[in-house]
Amino acid sequence: MTDPSLIARKVALLVEHVARLRRRRPEEVESLRADVDRLDAIALSVLVVVQEAVDIAFHIASDEGWGIAATYREGFETLARHGVISAELAGRLAGSVRLRNRIAHGYGSVDVDTLWAELPTGIEAFESFAVAVSAFVQQSR
Image (cartoon, rainbow, N blue to C red; front, side, top):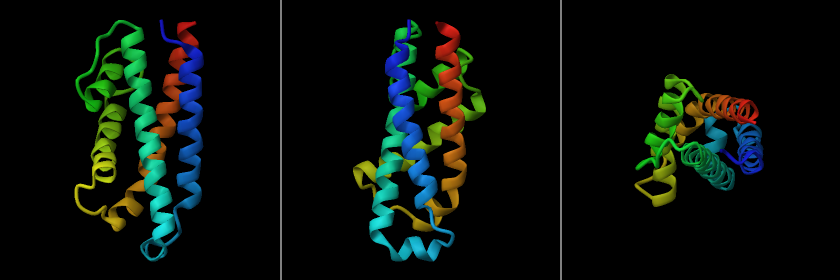
C-alpha cells in the first residue's frame, strides 16, 4: 500500500516549486533571456518538479505492486494504466522528462523561448498530477 505521508511530503514539495515557477516566469521572454539568475532558478524548480513527480510515480507503482518502471516515461504510463492519471496527462508529463534531462545533463543549451512558452502548460500539467495522486492516495486509505 502506498505510504500517504511520503506522497504528501513529495506532493507538497512539487506544489511549492510549481508555485515558484509560476511566480518566476516573467511576462515577456526578453526579461527571462536577460536574467540568467532567474533562468537558473526556473531551471532548478523544473528539475525539482519533474524529479518529485517521477519519484511519486515510482513509489505508487512499486507500493501498489504494479511493477518497477524502467524509465521515467514508464512510471507515468503505469499510473495511467491503473487510472491514477489520464493517458493524456501521462504523455504531457513524459514530455517534461526531456527538458529535465537537458537541464540535468547539459545536453546543449535550454531554448529560453521554448521554456518560457511551454512553462504555463507544464505548470498546469504538474498541478493536475498533484491533484490526481493526492486523490488516489486519499481513496486508497
